[in-house]
Length: 142
Image 1 (tube, rainbow, N blue to C red):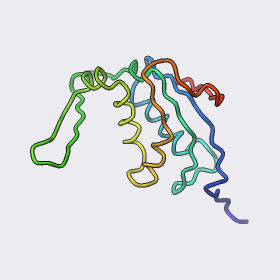
Image 2: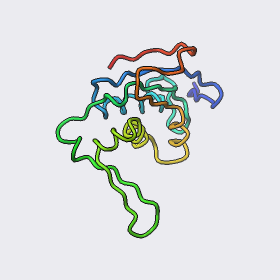
Image 3: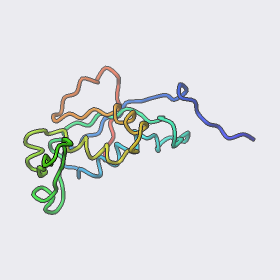
Image 4: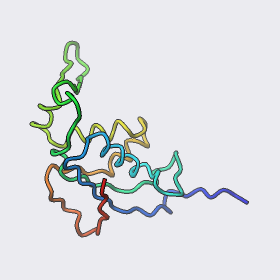
C-alpha cells in the first residue's frame, strides 16, 4: 500500500475567522499558525502549503499576561550602524493595532520560503468588521 501525498493543487482551502477579543495574544497566534500550516487536516504535509486561510478580528483587544504590556519589546533594524529601533507592546498597539498579532503569527511559521507563502494567507483586522463575509467563513471559538 502506498502512502498518500497530496499535490499542491489538490488542497481544498477554507476560510476561518478567529475573534481575538479578550483572548491571550500568543494563544490566538498559535491557533492561527496551526490552521495556516494545515496541521488540523489529516493530509498534513510539512513541506507543502496545505493550510487554510485565516481572518483575525478584534486584534487590538487581545490581551497579554503579566507585565508584558510594559516589558515586551519589539525590535527592528534598517541595516545601518546604530539604527536599532525598539518599541514596547503598549506603544505598538497604540500606533499599529494589528502588527503585534501579525508578528506573533509570522514567528510561529517556518522561517523560509514556505513560511513566507503561508503568511500571505492571514488577514488581521483591529475591529469587528471584515470584508470576507461573502466567502462564508467558519467562526472558531477559542
